[in-house]
Amino acid sequence: MYAIGERINGMFKSVRGAIQERNPEAVHDLVRRQLEAGANCLDVNVGPAAADPLEAMEWLVKTIREVTKAPLAIDTTKPDVMRKGLELAGPGSVINSTKGQQEQLDIFVPMAVEYQASLIALTIDENGIPRDADGRSEIALRVVASGMEHGLEPDRLMIDAVILPVNVAQATPGHVLDTIRSVKVLSDPPPKTVLGLSNVSQGTQMRELINRTYLVMALAAGMDAAIVDVLDTELMDAMIAAELLMNRTVYADDFLKAYRASNRA
Amino acid sequence: MPLEMPVEKWAAAVNTVTIGATAAEGGTRKATVTIGGDTSLPFLHFEGKTPNRPAIAMEVLDVPPQNIAPPLESALGAVMADPVAWARKAVEEWGADAVCLRLLGAHPDQANRSPEECAQTVKAVLGAVSVPLIIWGCGQPEKDNEVMPRCSEVAGGENCLLGTASQNNYKTITAACMADGHKLITEAPLDINIQKQVNILVSEMGMDLSRIVMFQVTGGIGYGMEYAYSIMERTRLAALSGDRMLSMPMLAVVGPEAWKAKEARTPEEVAPQWGAAEERGVSWEATTATCFLHAGTNLLVMWHPRSAALVRKTIDSLMG
Image (cartoon, each protein chain N blue to C red):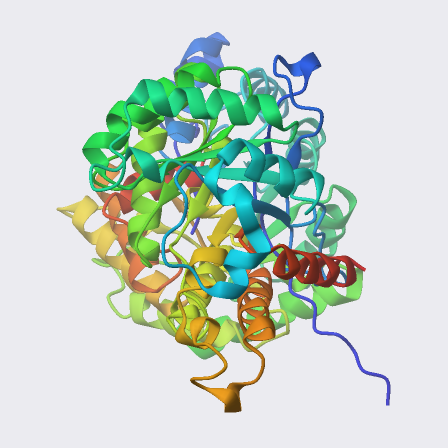
């Protein structure tokens, strides 16, 4: 699984503080710990409270690039902030994210082509989040068609079927799994699938248990990538065991160590 | 209708390993051998690269082999009694890329030679040939743990390939390899899971993964070849998919396995319907080796000079 580490996000107090004070140490520490824990890519989000998001993104990406060349997922809804992030992060980055309505796709799909980036597309459009899997797949199809039109290979698209907290919308986890399965027949090669996992447990008790259980279910349905807390060791262990049980890796007694050694970004 | 080749996209490559060190590199070899680096299944030149041709090492024993098939005995001739002469002939007349010196004489059931005696043999063979050396223990773990460190030491700087580290006996040889700058063979008994585990264990000792060659135990045609083949093929697929713990080049010990087969050994008068004994064993060894080339073997250990010559020609044509 392509693991995108979620911790460099201005919603966390320590990161918000680091951005406000322009303190690189806290950011460097999160970069190192997440990569060490098995992140293949690092999400970068300045958070809603940033006074000047453009400037904050510029500082944050430059600060991260002082210690790693690992791929970054630039996490913003603002096109100008996205562009700045991609420019500084370099080719191989991830755009996180676009929604499925045409006017957004017309901005972000060409941007992905221009910056040689992958594109996370949420199955949300002007009507909001569809109620079921069919509605999500319809939006995914629109995204794939837009990719083809602009010359973005399907395997650089990552469809995010938008998981909601299980205590708010208990049917959604099932709909999302169905979407992950059906997205795989939209094109050849198929688009990738991704989830912002932690949302499934937002506001619940036993968040970690819910997260890792659902992660394994989504992997079994065919999910390729997830934005996760890679510092949650039990979550990562469950992911690695799932990869093994799906015959994607070769068993060895120390299969956890082997996976981690093979998958450092 | 034109045929469109189905091309696989692979994520990773097999490690590249060089054996032997020239004077400039701190050794005394005139030639080195580089294997691996493949970016696709073997010889699929339309799909990826097979940058280094598979190498042929010829095996040399430090004690005369017992009870070997007559065609092999006559081909090897008198040099079987002398590892130095044998090694020299393997390189100068038979064109071996490397010599695989097997220290069978150290075995308590054989000559039970001391570590010092074995080390002298290693030194003598190193002095007699200018190609890289594979140094292989006698297979008795306790004895190998005494013999291999001393042999490793006297070959220091020559960047030899030392064998073997197994799941239950890997620490001594790995430490010796690291101390004296050699490459290491990790071995597993026809078991990809144990092969991976041994690689993890030696890497945890600090052995760089790029200094390892894997040996999965070889079966001759008719005697388990298909098991070894499928394990090696699966290993190669894992390497190309990015499993760093299975990304090392692979070695097959073809000679001794092929010549164990009754099809290779049975005299003509016993089985006239099988054809000339002189050809049968040679074909058995060459065909076994060719199968393993297709499974992804990067380094072959062979016995009969004519088998080796046939396989060299096959490699020429496969490399295009």
